[in-house]
Length: 580
Image 1: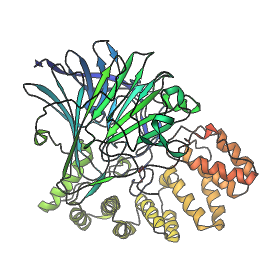
Image 2: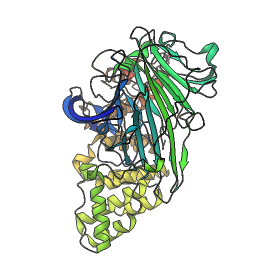
Image 3: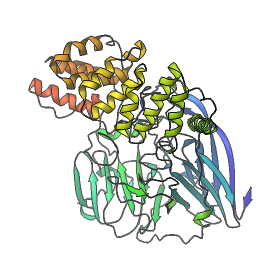
Image 4: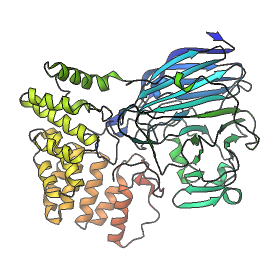
């Protein structure tokens, strides 16, 4: 339908999609490599399958914007109609790479993150709504997220004659406790050596293999060819609140402007033109790299804010596609009259399969009926920590269930307690689920965090299910605890790891390398570490630490770190992990 010079249509289309392999049935509560209650992933399949997605197109005579609610409300395309060119990076396939929080990041388009960077649901379907007024068309995407139960909506809108996309994000906390949050709008643009980075002058934090503060005018890169390694730049001061990138060889550019009072965040991310460039092509069908230009309401990614109970926050950003370079010091925030923030829809839970079971449990407990059947543990369907009212329902289910069902309700109760941060209460409940291996595996993680290695080892040794004993999640957790207990457990470690020495699982290979190092077999450890088929992974440095250990044992220099390890070289920075 066309109204006020703006059209909005929807369509379905297939996209080649590389599926993800879940890490396993042990919940992600207090897991530094995950974010509860979401499943973490361990591997991306090499061959894609066809999957169908819904897209919404918003357009006027100057630009055409495509939004995908089935991919977290991401903008997948912006076409500059004057030139007919795409200004966003469009990788042609959905191929997740190993980046926190779930190790399933997909590059391309514009991703709006909340309550962490990157969003846990960036590849999941969220709810959406299309609304029209006399002067604008609005496409709103959002959900109530599972981690804290907070609501987020990203509203895209277009008016007749607009040469920019207006993006407004609204965050609301309907709960009774304050929760931490951050948010970034991450636009991926195709890059080339001649890609020009038009960012303001000022003091900039440069995050690469080192962490430095630079003066952008004197030391900042002017184009992609000036960047040697993967680097993130955060602006601490600036003389403008606009930025962008333009590539002369493509004839395309994208610029961002916002009111500094509500959206001061400004970041540039590049993989550079050196050895790290290969990381920029992991998620595409062709060897074409990309860079990211990012904005948001927080100045950098090392801190989070808190959203108080019943509090609402919002900010507006503008994206300007262009077929020529723009002067960022001449760009001003567009004067746009938007509908009241109170008219922006706030959505409920987006995926019924994730919350329906737990809503049924609450209803059954309130009506004093019979407890519903608990989910099979291999479904990895863990009760959302964002649902505040589950404690009484779990207690009721445990009291009214029998045998195996009672054990599972104890497991889910303890899982939910751990997911909400109640570690001691979770330990007490999980300790009572002695016959359920997944409960004991999660219990071991919590006990280890408390420094009780003896009880953690006992919990892992109590697991009776053969399939779970040999599952990589448990194999790794057991070996870590046994090693921490001391060298007297070396024979036990070797006995367990020998039972899975044909597994090509990267985490198990890491533990086998560690065992070889501990036995003083450094050459064997080196051969195994360098021959393993590791997928590249960001923000995880286990293999690098192993390399340093074995190089010390061999009295060899550990630099340069071999690319076969598949780990980046970034210095520690950023609020990416909740638990270490």
